[in-house]
Amino acid sequence: MPEGEHDLLDGEQPPFADLIGFRTVSASRDEVVAELLATEALTNRNGVLHGGAIMAFADHLGGLGAIANLHTGQATTTIESKTNFLRPVSVGDVLLGVCIPLHKGRTTQVWQTTVTRRDGKVVAIVTQTQMVLNQFQRA
Image (cartoon, rainbow, N blue to C red; front, side):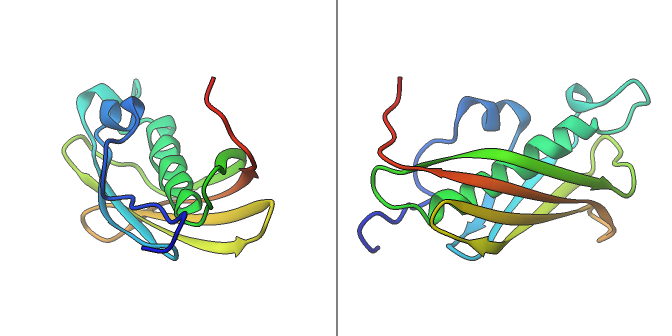
C-alpha cells in the first residue's frame, strides 16, 4: 500500500458506526460499499427507517472514501450534505450503499452515495462535500 494510503477494511470503526450497525463490504480509493440492517432501534414514529439513519450511513461512507484518498497527517470532515429521499425502508431490510467520488481535490472532495434496498430500488441519493484538514492532531 502506498505511503499514507489507508486500509479501510482493517482496524476498528468509530463507535458511532458500530452503534448503527455499519458494515464495510469493500473499499478502495474510488468506491466504498457498505451495508446497514434496518433495525427497530433506527426507526421513526412511522415504523420505517429514520432519515437520519440513512444520512448517517451515507455520511460515513463518504468519509471513508475521503479518508482513502488522504495523506499521512491529514483528516477530513463533512462540510455539506444533501439527501434526496425516494422511498421508505422497512425493519429487517438491508441497505446497500455505493459511494463514488465526483471530485477529489486538494482541499475538498465531493462524494455521492446511492442507497438501495434489498429489492434493488433506490432509497436515497446523498451528495456530500468533505473538507481536507492538513496537519490534523486529535484533541
